[in-house]
Image (tube, rainbow, N blue to C red; front, side, top):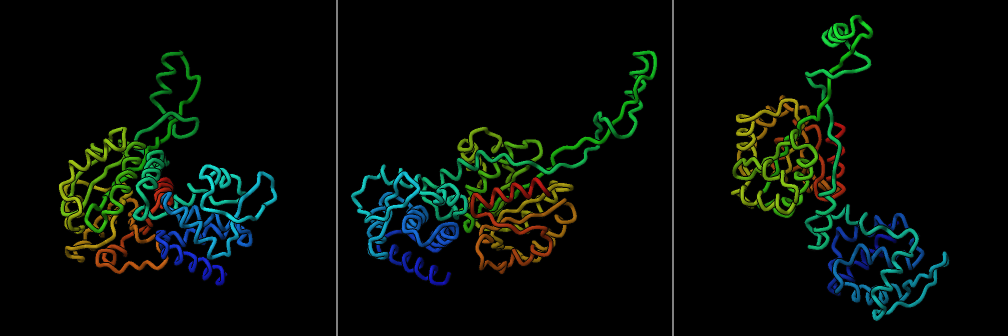
Length: 356
């Protein structure tokens, strides 16, 4: 395993020297893909590297040259049968034929699957647009809570009014009517940090918020936080995500500014309530205000909310440590600290909202 890591990181360094943006994240995705492939098969190594390390069409000929030089020219041209033929690949090969061969390789990592785990801050414009398109299709379930209202049921407490009405209408008591408490979606309050340090992730977080609002319009409230608290739920109710984001950009006056989480959380808890709701704060925790104030307001929020979830984009990295002042102040009052850097992380967050 160590030999494989050393070999592939050396190959990534060769690509970077040739002008391909094969950074740490792309190399990590390559190693994850190779865990599911036969690393002794040149075809599978070739296509796994091509799908994970290349970002633009200009990277393809550079990748082919580096692969030929690094691995001694052994690349794959796969036949339509189950037998794999190993041949020398040239950069002049037809692009359409290469893509057709990629589909024919058994066990090749799916490009969509790889894209799901990529950091959105490191995507190309085309890749980010695809992630945003998949986010717009997200329709997660919402955790249910018991309502004060009752609904008719086969089992439950006796519904005296319906039973008496039936008896008066029919002349006798033909059946005892039952009722039980109805359920309704648990409310979600989402606070999205739009400060400068969160700029690479703010748009994707707001698109996730748009998907939540579209799924449960009455049970979702969204606010932007930076240097001031701004309600943006109404803007996110537009059916089209692009239109919704344009309206949000007009409503939010503090894009890419500072972060005063404690003051804004105090303002929210003074003006509104999170009682019984799932409170979600999406921020990297770079607090420019007083961390003690943030800790005090987080304690208030934890007493009110059903559950408190903090979404930090940097949590997706294995070496992450919550060392910023804001994160240290908030950590004792959190039920969950989750990642928010990729499509897969947002899908996992959606499942947490369904199971909270």
